[in-house]
Length: 102
Image 1 (cartoon, rainbow, N blue to C red):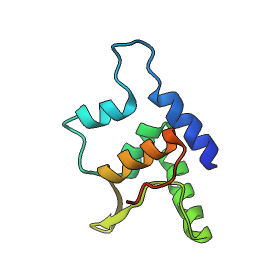
Image 2: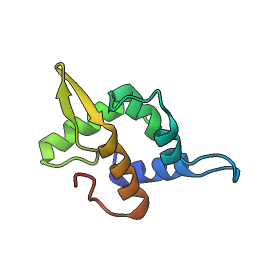
Image 3: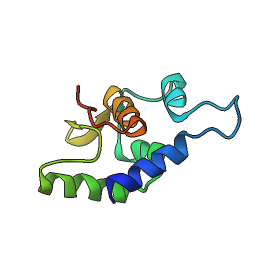
């Protein structure tokens, strides 16, 4: 999956249908049940892709020495995405930048 497709899906998910409906970032920030470390399934649901696509994108990024996903860590032997990195990454996609690891 290309970065442009991810940007398109994030933009579609971030759009609001009414003035009262929160954006994706607002939902992430307001959702108190969202853990500080997201797993593949949780991140995939946020950006509207399958967990398998997410794993494939991460794997392809490793082989190319880069990734079009937020930076991740290994916690308990499993991949986790720190919430603050996810928010920065989504913000960089919606603004056209790529500084999600600051």
